[in-house]
Length: 267
Image (cartoon, rainbow, N blue to C red; front, side, top):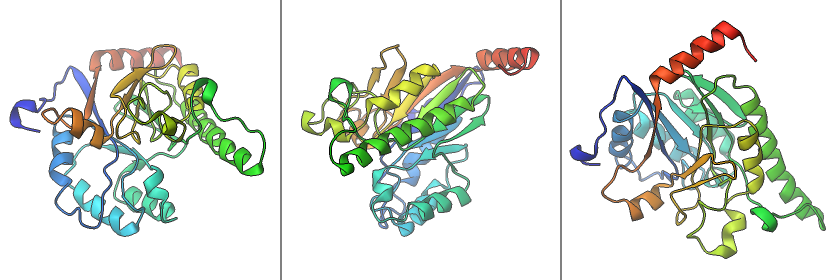
């Protein structure tokens, strides 16, 4: 990001910066911190949509923590499939949590009046091509994992009472943002089941990664914006723009909604 690309913070809007697929390795020392610092300079909150590490190693997570030390705004993150590669996802989760990152895995949190719900998500396909739980047990287990992640997302969203709610995923909830990838692998890039709770709770926006050659944005069937914020995708198609997605939410609207909620009580 160059100086001309930097977005000055404003008191009239709350800015959320989102990126995914950092793929931090043991050799990433000094490589990610300038990028992450610039993202944070332009935002009030930073979201990271999974694949934080490359091989899912605790050593990589420790490097990432050092790279994130330059970020002075709240960080919300979920894990991705790469973070599970070595079976050390619990350690990675703890390392990042201990460093102050708000790790979401079926959890919800509130920051500056905005609600955040997050899960990794899972594969399974979209629409009529969604894999069904029929046949061999291994297929049923595969489908059940997608259902479990969907239920975790629904549970997290159900705990949020504020009108402005943001979902953070790794896998895509719609097909539109994986288009550009080979159609043969669509089913491994996300699952349409994840869109059901997003629409039921009417979230403000959704961020995900995973599809490195996908499409920047799409919408659910009810019109909720979904953003693919994979770093490889942004580097390839927007090399001269900030390598993160910025979502602006008017501060006045947040304050009015908060005041109305306090006056009327929780729904």
